[in-house]
Amino acid sequence: MTSARTTGKVTTEFTRCPACGLITYASRLARAGGVCPECGAHGRLSAPDRLAYLLDDATVAPLPADDPVRDPLGFADSRPYRDRLAAARRATGLSEAVLCARGTIEGTPVTVAVMDFGFLGGSLGMVVGDRITRAAETALADRTPLIIVTASGGARMQEGVLSLMQMAKVSQAIAALDDAGLLTVSIITEPTFGGVAASFAACTDVVIAEPAARMGFAGPRVIEQTVRETLPDGFQTAGFLLAHGMVDRVVPRGELRAVLGRLLAVTRPAAPGPAPDVLIRDPARLPEKDAWDTVRDARDPDRPTTLEYAAALLDGFVELHGDRLAGDCPAIVGGLGVLRGRPVLLLGHQKGHTTRELIERRFGMASPEGYRKAARLLRLAAKLGLPVVTLVDTPGAYPGVAAEERGQAFAIADIIKQLCSLPVPVVSVVVGEGGSGGALALAVADRVLCRAGAFYSVISPEGCAAILWKDAAAAPRAARALRLGARHLLASSVVEAVVPEPADRAQVTAAVGDAVAATLNALDGTAPHELVAARRARFRRY
Image: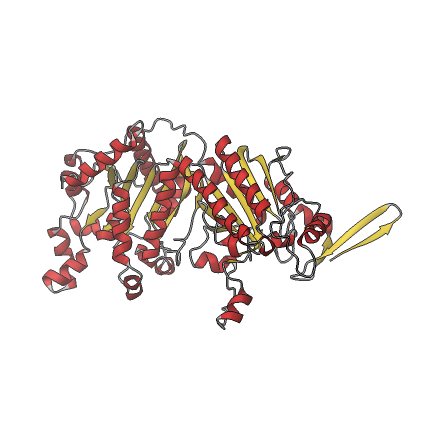
């Protein structure tokens, strides 16, 4: 709601936030990108405003938008479809429900398609489908990332089955970008439903939602009126989608350009520099150490976590969430960043330092959703040609009933098999505990390293003691019998090298970074088929 007060020749416009009722200057709201400064509610932006807000200044180059009016059915309800189109054009100043353009975001060239809900509810018709498809084809020709901002009620009923075909048409254009190894990103805004949600909005590499944006195939009213189900609070909102593994991130509008800029940085050519060789390759250089002492050191809650390694070692790290099926797992984290000039995908088990953090992260014991999230991100790395770095620190996969119901064994089996054929370099570092198949699931790699104070085992010492000694208190004895420790791992060639353990915490993360960077440098220039063949030969010899 907007009002104007005129004094002499000066006109001041006010607007009211529909969420909290705040009355503020319209110009202030515009500078904030339509976000209420009081409650943070995200107002709807027109497609032109969204393009201007998203792209770098003076870089917006619109793609052709001279499509003829399409009315394949000569449709009329209470008024002819052509009249509705004409009214929408007058009301919005747009010729259709999407604008497409070239431009840059923080200096990186992109192609963007922005839908406008104000034009017939952002519905997907033939012209909209054509324009987004042409935007994808432009991205393919220019070899730029494609970003699609969605705001739609779904397919346009007035164009009948031909509007339904747009779902497949746009999706196959995005599939061509997958084949070409080009990054695709969806930005979900309020609302995104129906055929748009069930096609190109959900099939991009990265899905970002604005706060409180809703997304789903069937809208709430349809669900309530057809199957008579009671909907939970927050159903289909951005927070709900994040918790259920459907979107990668929920990003406030004011932070969106920065997040996109960091994501886009991984599409730039790698420029890695030299790295010092800190690795220990001779077991004789490692001191003899009691196996139980190694176990206790590896479990020290003060050791850096994967997210701390990411913050220390990667420029512009962007964590990505969700398995796109059912949920997100806090015990495995992953995302994109730049390691000393080289874009990489980082995956790792996540524990914590306090009891509360450890419980929240399930002590690094991943669920099937965690392994499926990791598998999804591995597919992204393969598509973009990014090396993969994994950090292993887990007592094992989560053993609960719910995990078994959701296919824990299948999830672990799938990711192990996937890593056996991944066509990019993979370097794994056991940075703490390496417990059983839950650890191996992130450690089928070209080079496996471990920190000097880490261990890698078929079973936890407590588990071994309970089974074979019938007494969990025999864990120290079991640890010694299993020869847990870096020296045995190196001597048996389970790991290629050991990362030394500096006393200073900052030096610990730096040493891991040096080790990974040097190892990736050594793998440079290896053809994908050679990587896969050597990786398979590595594990065949055991």
